[in-house]
Image (cartoon, rainbow, N blue to C red):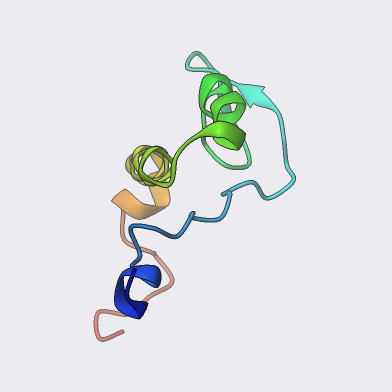
Length: 77
């Protein structure tokens, strides 16, 4: 294996999105801290790096802050 492939982002396990605010809430049963489902939280320790990235992509889509502009930001900034 060459050095470039050893540092490929596809081979590196992404860090957990857990922020230590753990409580499943709402009709979808999402964690209020990390926005993962209970199944995704349970799967995380044994998930491949590829699956972890897929979970993080799903979390990003669930994040209302990612979908709407920050009201504190200016148009230039």
